[in-house]
Image (cartoon, rainbow, N blue to C red; front, side, top):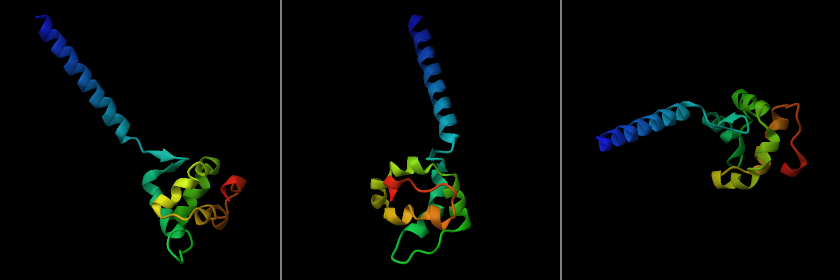
Length: 105
């Protein structure tokens, strides 16, 4: 009988963990106040030889971004084919009120 109650307890724990994982997975992942799913909206403006100007959607994301936080990812940007100098030029191109921190330039 003890074995059956242990098995039931384990099944309940597994079900609870799966439920928590499902709820957590439903939340939108963000980095530096930017939803990761929307970050692709800025990629054309920071890649290639002659990137186009940032779109309104991209600028909207940049204006809400935590620029100090983004500085922490500066060295990782080339791995995503993103030129850091172009990425940190976006706030100026988007006429953001907050300047890019000096360590990002």
